[in-house]
Length: 341
Image (cartoon, rainbow, N blue to C red; front, side, top):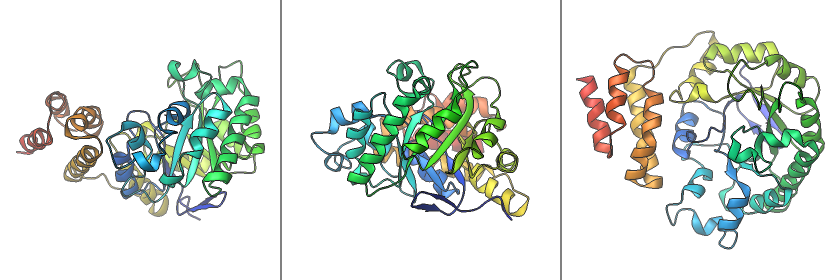
């Protein structure tokens, strides 16, 4: 039986089990759309502050704002052009703020609502959100419960999912407890990145924790952490028994990892995409981003994306040096044309 297979998350049935993780600063709706084209079966928006969302847009409604003005916060959580299935990820330290923000999302029609309980960034953690929730499992449960309530009242009962870490630090490995509480509160899937908050993104993720969690909870477990290649996806699925894998840093600049991983899981082989395909993705990404936030901002934002897309290619350093000064779409086109000539 192929390791590439459908997955059910509550009432949501997905055609495959290769997911795109929420990565702050990278998984804008343009990139998510390209990943969907390349085979990402399910994708998650960048984390968005629940409190900021309802304070800024609660009196208007997101249906009034989206599409009528360029607004970065709203564009972060709109569905990408090619995204068939996507989840909006919220973070917050209080159940009421999660409830209020989730209740606003009806016009955007997400397929799931995800709670961030893994972000290690200080500005998120200091407000009791992200991985700080691992220090307070009872509050984590209340937050999931509030999201589930909002889903049933305003979002048609879409599934609520949660992403967690293995614990706050090595002395407090409590992923099993947090996952159990989240599921009891109504979570339909748990994603585990098996590093502690103290580790941040250093060291090696412990996939044994993913395998353990699979045996402990009755809902699908998605594995994350140190997934860079199609072979990594195959290994995680086969060794841990997780229902799905979630590419994060491994997909940055490499949306092709999804089609490659599917090919490997189904046929046992995959092929590297030629530079011409990579270039086409770069320009499509930039043009979609410009349509969302304007050409000037898109060109600035694209600099880091461009660096990721061109990592590892011959002459890439010189190419990136030019790109960090590009201010227009035409300048990006010219940089690529000069490289290929």
